[in-house]
Length: 274
Image (cartoon, rainbow, N blue to C red; front, side, top):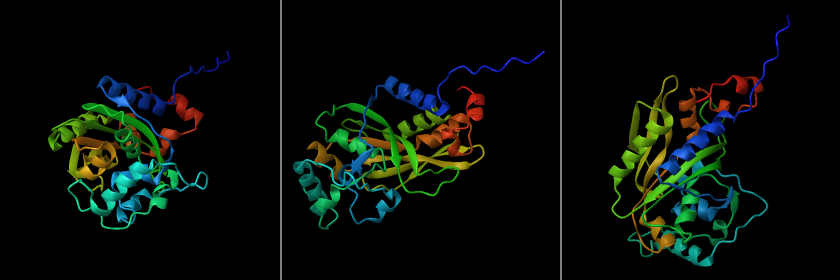
């Protein structure tokens, strides 16, 4: 008797299914989804986030600049406000970075290096609701060495909460919830960090059963130099950017991030449903 052939029913790719689940949870928590272009400008990707054009903090955002289009169309009124914040702090209570801001450089087009560009766009859109909660699941690109936990193109889950009187205590509670809800992490660490656009800043780590402590993302409270030029006033905004690929590794029980994007049909057919 010949064995009948196996029949494989249709199903979503496992990582796509996981990302859809993250989206549904965030929407269920009252967050509104935001988005932005993959081909971004230096302005929204870094300058609007108070990252100085000469600063070593940009080293981790080793961007892929594009040839066409070479320059983006940015409202001159916004460039003027961000330029003033960089050069002198303007009316933010800061002295700025004290350098000559390059207006041509800020228009250069690149592949988005971080989902925080979508947060900057949302804050400066004129459509921000206060209080409000926003998130995005964004494809980002950085030059990086490929290994078990790093890829040059990756997803981030980015978001922020805007409301008067928010503090670091609110942010820590939010990070703990994310680690538990999305990564099923039992052991987490929240340690001080540095990002040019947040103060204070923090980094979230979770313990993987085989890889040990893995960084899941960064977070903090947006500085007035970010908020005021874009919004026209200062209000408390707690923000985070999570490496959702690594969180997916936790959830799906993986030890190599490349398996999330596998094209191996045998592997994909036999992977477990979550």
